[in-house]
Length: 214
Length: 214
DNA sequence: TATTACATACCGACTAAATGTATGTATATA
DNA sequence: TATATACATACATTTAGTCGGTATGTAATA
Image 1 (tube, rainbow over the protein chains, first blue to last red):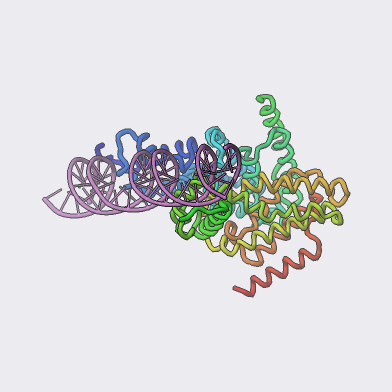
Image 2: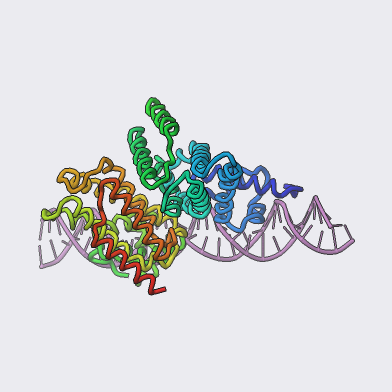
């Protein structure tokens, strides 16, 4: 295939296809050739020109997925929100990001894709937690949050999100609701009242919808 | 090499070598041939006779590591302990198991070994949590524990143990201590006073030891 | 006890698949 | 026009897994 005037386009295409395949079939089950096949016309040489290895594609993907729609960029400029409110918004945005790809993620058991799981955990720790930390600190300063455990909470919250993923920890609607109650109580006790009444109602409702789907 | 009269010996040997290598170099970085090389005289044929695939070796290992020294077997018969006390003992036994291999586990960043990480998470959920659940329920019945969240706690505790692994979540002694305080407070609030004064003292001491090592 | 039949522990060569490398070619840009 | 680079192509290498074969153990039979 002819050389592309805008190589970034090729690069993006590679990441797009890779993301789709990794989520559909898993990282190990996806070969470079599989990716190439979805790249109409290009060859493996092109891929290896842009990326040193399959792992490097994965790393790039993890960064991209986070940066593409970084909840914290959206939240940061909002002078009208205090720390707690920003935190709530960031969590919800982040959650809906997850859900957008969860349709595909759910289709394949994530525990069978250790590389993806590890990727999530690592990017949580490196990217998500520091941002959470900032917001919690901000809340501590403006008085909307009052916790001794900013660092600990910022690390733990992503882990709790993991706990809420039914593909890892299977749970029916009732069990999901109990988990949420648990987390609600936990966060309140630790001084980070993340869920307000409206959020709890929304969550409750979304579960009853799931219930009816079964 | 001559056929072994007791094939279990060969099987054990394979698992031994595999465990060593997986922890030293990681799962993906260990080839079947690497395992064979540590098996004085045997060939890859032997390994493939006992195991269908590399993954099957991993699965067998996970089971073995748990069953070999299952904390719950030790605890179960102890009529002199109530549920809470059994829970404490199981946690400590389990923890010291971890520490025994942690010398090797720590040496290699576990996030670079997604397969092992996923294995830990899955075996926690399938083996550890159900046992925790039983003990917590027992405690709830005999009055030594009083929580609405037996199921949730039994799932969350292994996740908290993950959080405490410095190879995944780097932390100095001070930070480790804060994590423990956090968990202590969390569990107390949820009705599962897992750490008594003695344990807290022990933990505190073990951290000051670490501190001095640096 | 000797023989036979069968099961299974293990060997070793082969296949297939996939990653990665080295080199070549054409095109864009300076 | 020269140079960098986007991409192609051929090749080398690594590794998982398969398969037919061999030797040794075990159990039944006589």
